[in-house]
Length: 216
Length: 322
Image (cartoon, rainbow over all chains, first blue to last red):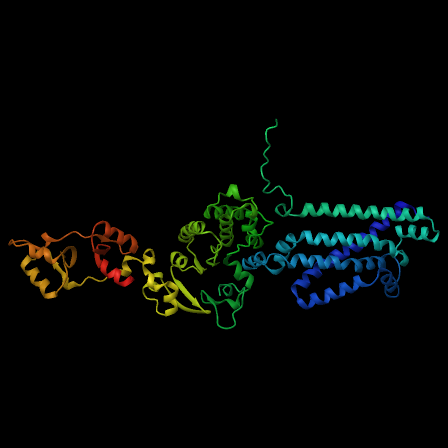
């Protein structure tokens, strides 16, 4: 019997390794798509295919290609979470007000400087909605990857399924749900911390003075 | 057209030289950092404070922190925004006019010798636009830079420009000072753009120098001349007036009726002369005409550095401008 804390630890490592990899690769891919139309079309198609393959099929495909174990499982999570990150990041950085990017180029920012100093900071909301969505997917997929030997909470769920013992299934699933919600919350907090003050919807900027009528 | 100068748009043909260097041989980023750039939609970065907006490019060019801070303070004072009050504000906390000023400060951040301005005041209301134009003229006199300024507003062009170029259908059809363009449009396109029929509108942009006519030396007589001789001279030259002066420099005007009315012997021409207004050639035509009107004169002397350069006749001015 796998100990629950150990299983939770494996699940978290698994899900967030895959997600981190997807962020590390996805955001540069989005930038590349912005830079080159051809690259954009190829990236868009490939990530869409990755997303379109059912997770079960993807898991099955992986075995003959990369074998079984923890690393192939991370790869599966990476593939199934890449698309939302690329698409959302691209949507964000490509829709920055052209007057702003034009001014940036006009005063002498390099393309890469415009990307890091202007486009990305102004697209944090879009980028984070992609990452948050992907984090939810990653937590789900990290259960299914038990079939290729990832370990983690999936082991408990699988054992419960085999024995038709619902409490054991729940023992695996409920922590996964809790982790999903917690990570979503943490990502929102992180987004809030990173977002520049004037872009926050309820920032302290331009807060009107509040007047209160004398009470009777 | 202006965007070709900093290689935001590459020309299909032809060359652009800045101080004899073909800009195609320069790195676009370095080129743009050496040229100020300001557009109608200022394009301030909304996520950065005023000082971050101004200091971004200098910081990327590795300007030391101390001198950067000093530069930002200097630039904000130059555009009349108290640095202490505005440095840490975000663009959306600023009014349109304040944003324009920050945009101007940002375009001056790298102390460029050339400044490109693409209709910078186009989107402002007339009052604010006028105020910023005034300030622009002050700053322009102060910074001593070459400024390439695009506008659709002829009035604005004449107000702000030392030399005005007229572009029609992508071709530069005329370049000259505002005066040259108003008095001699040269082509029907320029004439219709300026509205030649209403040259009177441009009295503010015309100098006395450009409207004055040279003094006819045959009409200038020495003040000691006897009235009788002067009378003969006037008849001979069929002139409407004579100028009395010394050493060929006129000092006053004498009209025919003055000569006819004076019967006494021994009266000299200089005794009859009326004082006339004296104008500085660089003052504006509208100032000159109001001065003449106030003094009831239809003729004025234009004197530069002690020597006379010409006379300004109200009739002549009217004739040329109508």
